[in-house]
Image 1 (cartoon, rainbow, N blue to C red):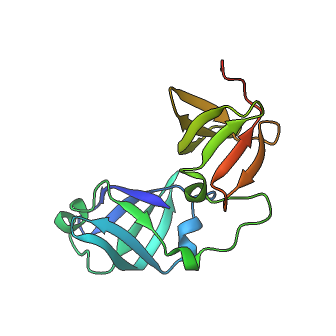
Image 2: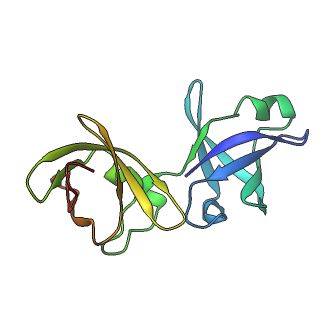
Image 3: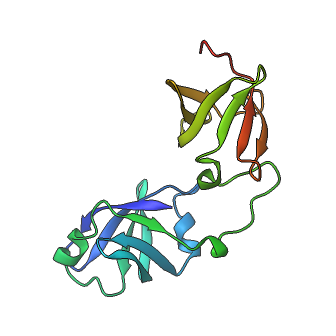
Length: 159
């Protein structure tokens, strides 16, 4: 759902780069999970606000700059059970990672390694015998079968 960037000030606040559709999407969750050196740890959010294109937040128990600095670069998540169900033909990126991608000619192009957003559309990164960047748009992605762990795309093997 995001990543902690750097400390913000000296009282334990952190800068957070959200991976949510809206910059304030994490505000819907009163507790965030942060991956620390010892594993995932729950942090109640004492206060958070939008600061430009990112967030600044005060997490419970993080009361000074040194503690905030220990969280630098750490991913932020919320439990899957707390997320709303996606609409029809909408997917959480985490559900797509690992799907086998096959084209209309039944050629397996590889597996989805990651996704990223561009100004125009989202892009899937498919890693197989080589890496391919495929736009995640209706004209290209024809079928997503989460149960079968596969995606059918209209994509030439030469691209």
